[in-house]
Image 1 (cartoon, helix red, strand yellow):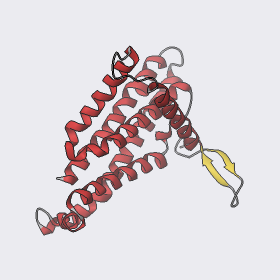
Image 2 (cartoon, one colour; image 1 turned 120 degrees about the vertical axis):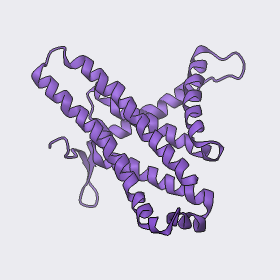
Image 3 (cartoon, one colour; image 1 turned 90 degrees about the horizontal axis):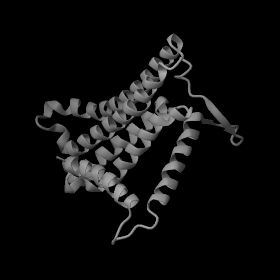
Length: 220
């Protein structure tokens, strides 16, 4: 229950005090890592005779880009940069526990915000592709009786995205704490690598994969 409570890192002394959650501070750190890492990795890129670092970077980014392009196609490629950014953020957030920090994705406010941004993008993709009139008309497809269910789906999608990510990360934390209590020496190490790295990457993949599928479905 303590983990479900959002801990306050510090309070900004304005407007009667604005509390800043620990998950927000860790997110700032992850943002700084991503920004600085991006700047360092793209320095000195060359068209001819690229170095090993550039080749490795192009391979990783190219593979991830192709994955999303295969899902979204030409019409959805403009959403790929957002999806890649979210994937990197969630992956780092899930693995930040290896550094002794609290994972932001263990805060339902963070996962809820990610889901809300994704659902706005999903609905926007439909409006952009079909136009407002056709987009609204699509809620009554394939038959008008489906209208309530299609409207309800708008709220179900972000809830499922939010709770799936939050539940898996919190569940992994609870399991790790129980393992540390039962066998505090050596045993938690391989489990930590599994839950913090493998499971963390899987959850990042699932989140952006489902978002991509929803975008594709909305555009079609």
